[in-house]
Length: 543
Image 1: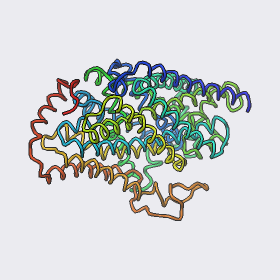
Image 2: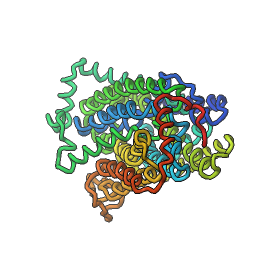
Image 3: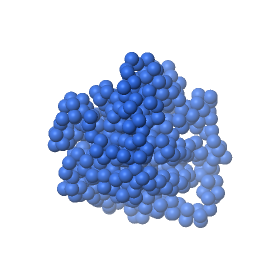
Image 4: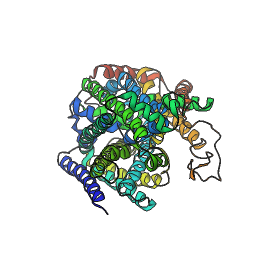
């Protein structure tokens, strides 16, 4: 191991040690379930805005989007736009009303006027499925990062890393709860913004702050000329790819408002006004960050040549940002390059750890609070028991994610996350929107829309080119299943455009066909008053 690797590894372990220390500190301040699940509702809008940003600016945005821009130019940037616009839906439709009407999980808000058991089971199932998809993406990112840092290309090291991240995330959740997780996210968001800003600055200095120079060099260096800066390089190839892009866009924009680990963040602030303010802070941060990805992506396309450019392509773009950091620091082998690469990789790793902690907490809280306490124990479990079950669930979900992430390693991270968004938009969003805005909506409608959207989106992914039938390019199998199997009956890579309408349609159909009495209508009025005013939200526990 050279000096550079020693430096890199030290910085890297420093970041991990910092997050572990925060977790221990937070565990001393956590007493009951309100602390464990919602951080005692004690965070200010700025802190929560930073934490939402920390939850949202995942490895997918940092590594995946800048990589997509480095490889496909303009079309790669479309991810950023979708991810950012999505916040308007979250702000206008969901943030405030959800903070007012729920308690800890998405299911609380549905179960308020429906039959407890079926609705909570459905909501918990979809929460866990979305979280696991999202976890996969983060863990794959961690594997390729560590392999780059230690300069080894062995599968064993990548698998070990994935295992290590899994163990760490189980630790954060079982020890620190929501307080620990939130502080890890705040620290990480600050680190990520500073790290990205530094590299953006260095790239701009290299091109004397001349943006057209940067873009021109990127276009000529990409070998695609002017086409690199124009729409259509990736999604304009055929009618199918155009529809695929539309499907991706719909999934990104509607998915955010249904992502369980974002929804749970609205519960960590004292009032709904704070929920709204924290979303504004988050939008500001995330917007600036996505402008950074533009410079990072085009900078990588302009400055990385030869071997490095090849490395970016083989990693499906996931290594563009770290390699660019090394380049602007003075290139491979220089101390400056090694320091910057180490800093960026450590920040990216912190990003991954913070996001997986949030996801694991969300899904295990849903299992304990919704299934164990409200379905099995009929709402009579003690706080200690509920927290104990959360810890067991975190362990189980962590292990499942580790086992699934190992085979999923050759997929682009941003793409895996887009699938999670499609599932969230198809299964969770219809139920949340109908529940807040439609008086007749009932238990059967809710379960049909959640399970229907879930099955539709997962089924379409199973029969899409993602799973099979893409063939081999440059010796790498482009799909998940071995090349001998081809079950790709559905032409699109992202199921959103078909599965989201199915989710909404089934919610309507289940409601209309249901024989349930209108007895829940009065409950709707109560929910509506509470969602709009926040009256009585704190005391809302069980019925």
